[in-house]
Length: 118
Length: 106
Image: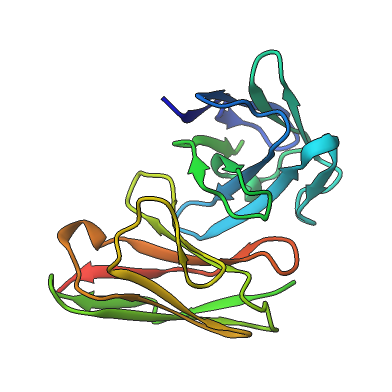
């Protein structure tokens, strides 16, 4: 079955760090665009990071310098390392696939909730 | 940043009715626009890409149109499973999403 499964969310204090994982099955994460998209409670969607082929990355201004996207092809898994977390980072984080390479997301995981609070 | 404004925020309709809602971009995005459907507790699902192309498995009752700054998603006859929130997304410059339109049962 083709799917994405995110893990690693939870409650974290402001200033803390967390690493999210996204395990893919039914396809390989290498050589395709992958992204993390978040949704704050009751709010819309925000693309926070994209990992292109060749390991080129792009980040939203709101997370630049704090978040790092990466992948491990041997584990077929995408990661998001989140440092210096702020209350405004509280959201459900979705992993998403861009199979066409033109920044449309055709497959999404169910998401993992990150809550930043003291 | 390209801002996408969706309207209306909420649309109250009955099954079988036609739904039409809008996405307006703060600057031209050509036809680089997609539509997603999201149901409560679920991830978004890609419906339409490049303004008017249906994604794999999307029924023909979903139709996207528009170019430049003004786009429309039309659902010709609402099925019970179509009541959800719909988001537009542009890829002209980075990736941004609209605020969503909720289609609720009247």
